[in-house]
Length: 381
Image 1 (cartoon, rainbow, N blue to C red):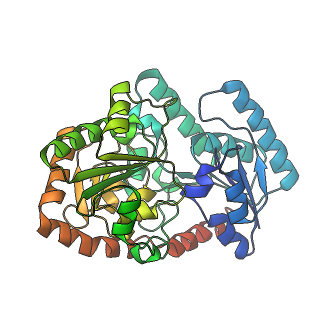
Image 2: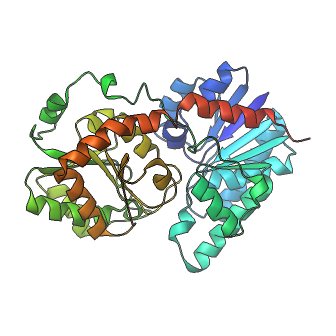
């Protein structure tokens, strides 16, 4: 069968669903990937080893450009005659599902991995809700990557439950627990810290992701400043890019991150495992997620997990079993959780002992890919 997989920008192929195209090509599918251009595209092509077409999607609301992309997708589908179109990310989902429905593609699937509209209000929220409903209208099956997200979609009258399916225990891609393992990194924690000018006896918190407001950066700045003022062994690694054009941080927060003596900014990193290995705890105070890979990756590398009580995070992390769950948008609660993990050695050791197994037993990547294959073989009559 011919499968066309579509995301908005290639970084999603590189990180959100890495390996799926290669897996299904090995299973005998004829796989084509579609996305906009981007700096990650050469790596994606080299890794997945499947044909890749470029459609100039944008991540903003750009009606005229979006219409041109829609027409381009229609032309591609008419030429390629795919059996399956599977989309992910909002813009690719909307245009991909509408074009696929118009062209009569036999099986149309859309994966939902977090919704920006959850953090919007007013007319923009109403518009984004309607866009999501239009995307689901074009799909035969919609795959939310968490049970909490699926329930939210039904409760907000966005889709009927019978059209939804959560694969396994959640996630869009599972996790490669061999790759994400402390033993997969040869360098020792002390050696890695030395390279980054961090003392061997420091307690290192790590955040991995975009440095934007809705990832909880304002709260993390406040909580860490307080921790560091109380204890000079506290350090913070911020692993990820700035994204000021979509969700900017204030100049004060940026200045703090850039000048604080116990904060290290690494920028975007293609391999985050060394930063997990040199850390002692993940601090991930995001406002919204689908099913965050970062939390699974950090847990698989033995890090206690501090996350917010949002969908995805609150399914991966169980209170005091493999981490701590706190309310979102609360610098006070984030501070208390960071202080607790840093100072309570009994808790810290218990979480470290249990966290990797809690990930391995539930989110094995091969199991998730097999579940996607079952959806692909269930062609609608």
